[in-house]
Image 1 (cartoon, rainbow, N blue to C red):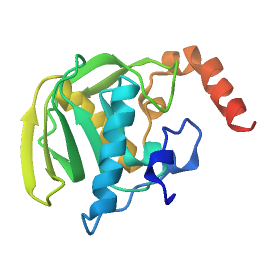
Image 2 (image 1 turned 60 degrees about the horizontal axis):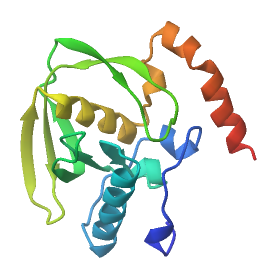
Image 3 (image 1 turned 135 degrees about the vertical axis):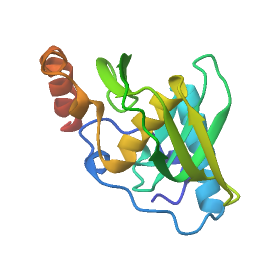
Image 4 (image 1 turned 45 degrees about the vertical axis):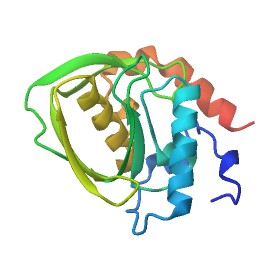
Length: 173
């Protein structure tokens, strides 16, 4: 990790860290809190709804998310687990800050419960059957090394072939 947390930025596909299963955070210290603050800022600047630590190059099981596209309340999720995923799947268009210009219809459980720790180390449990449940699932995928490209239909994969290739080519320069 860089010494200066202010130098952390959102990585784009095909950065290798995006494909790694992230490690649990054992100790919530000032560095973790500073990284979380930086992630919040990057998410808001990019007008995103969530951002996972692997997206800024850290293989940590942590993400930030807000519950409303218009701003809403933002929260930090440390070492999250998803539970009670609804068997009812709903399709909705998703994008990803690490895959700019790429959108696809993604099937996700309609509702979910998340268990995580906050920046003070306190465990919390939340449930949602709204957009927030989708955001949790998307960000949880990131800490598992899963991208929306893995969940795309064949048609969406074909439709996004050119922008994906452009991201790969841009990474080589």
